[in-house]
Length: 220
Image (cartoon, rainbow, N blue to C red):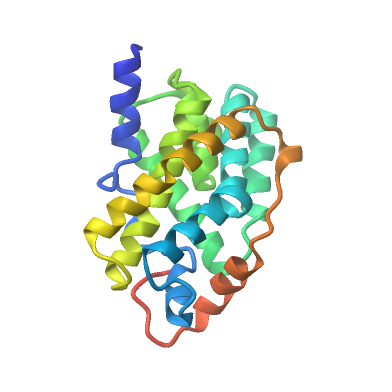
């Protein structure tokens, strides 16, 4: 495929319109907003930068890279999928990554490839994206950049719907995250599973506490 074709395909797969249901998940951000820790564009950008550098965004990027490298190796790919599922830190986090991964694989069947069968129709979201991207000849770094931009954009949309920022502010946050997304994609493209690790404890606790948030717009 040409680079232009790869770009269009990534834009399709990681578009908000691609039917993975991302709009219904906040990754605990709804709880963080309720707690007052994210209350404007600056605190939102800081929160997302932390996830990219030290949180679940980074771990997802490492898992995506591993799935990309392992897409043709059944045993290694299965191990990556099992590890990604095991690393889900809460019931909602597990539901979020597994249901999005399953929906991604179902929709990606419009681009048939044997890797879909190797994944068995279900895998954590980053594993599904990484394996399918590799199977279609899309470079790891490009897939990582598109994935990280998509998940960050979804949380910006969550913040807009929670009333923290407006659409103009959301665009400004994404502009501010651009260099961090590129740097994280570059770093993750050369990562191994030894690079897994997170230090965003407040984010993990927020994800757990969201399970009992009285009034919720989001599933996580």
